[in-house]
Image 1 (cartoon, helix red, strand yellow):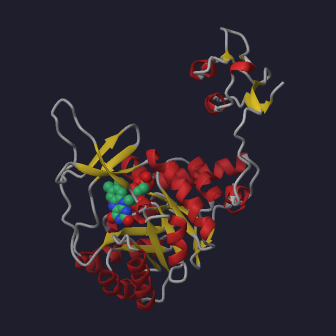
Image 2: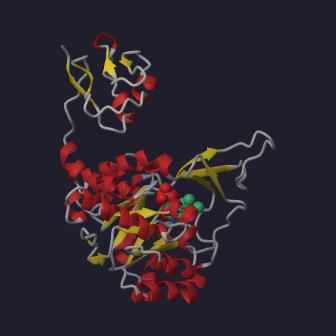
Length: 371
Ligand SMILES: Cc1cc2nc3c(=O)[nH]c(=O)nc-3n(C[C@H](O)[C@H](O)[C@H](O)COP(=O)(O)O)c2cc1C
């Protein structure tokens, strides 16, 4: 099996799949279960100087595997973490020989008070989230935490933080790496029968996570990895081993999993890591390092953009399994897939949109020059 070990932040992670901050790591017991579930490193739920006033209810599923949440940071006061939960978490990290990251937020004062305590208790690194949107306040916060601790610090970015490439470049002198992205929102779900929201927040709003936000997370990782050489933890919708490969190709060093761990349990970390290993084996790679940054390097300066109709879809008859899906999605009526016959393209109607390529499960369609 391919080597899944990742060296990042001066530590060895046994595989690239770690928990992302959330209820999945909301206590020492749950952190220990994450280690038993095969996570390649550990992370503890975000704490702040006060316990979070979390509305109830605060989680609801939408679509197949997505969540809306209004959970904020830990409902436990910091003392509960320092007196009990961190002890259990650190024990699990030592027993399983895993690096451990403490998540904390949100203001400069919160972080300069909590940072040294997290270092003293034995945390390997700190991931910090913030509510500031003003770039100068952000830089001041990162600089103050940098002064306060000597362990690695990782800035967790959200799409609401502004242009992520610019934010990463601003923070780079002070931090050891980045996590992208936090949940997105706020959003709203309405149950039309009862005219209610499943969220207990004031207006029923919540924040989106899961596969629905994966394209945004991948783009963010790519953008940050393009702006800095520091390690990036990719978070947002990771559910399968193939997702891990995509994040690594975009430039991530590690990936974080929250929603999938909530919906499927702590065994999901090891399962996703094993799937990533199987993907590497099946594609002839001997280590996860070999796929890291493949997309980043290929697209770093951008590709040539074709705006005219230079090409059209073509079906490879040897690969077509006559499933007719391409015809059903072709709104230009250029694709023809008569029952039990190989699909074919009426080139004059083909708009080279690529949709048929994206739905074909048999790699039977490509865009080629016209004529
Ligand atoms: C219920 C819930 C609680 C969360 N709590 C935190 C938190 O305390 N701190 C934090 O930085 N991110 C928090 N997040 C965001 C996740 O860490 C992650 O960035 C986001 O959900 C996207 O990843 P996912 O699609 O794997 O869930 C939370 C997410 C969920 C769903």
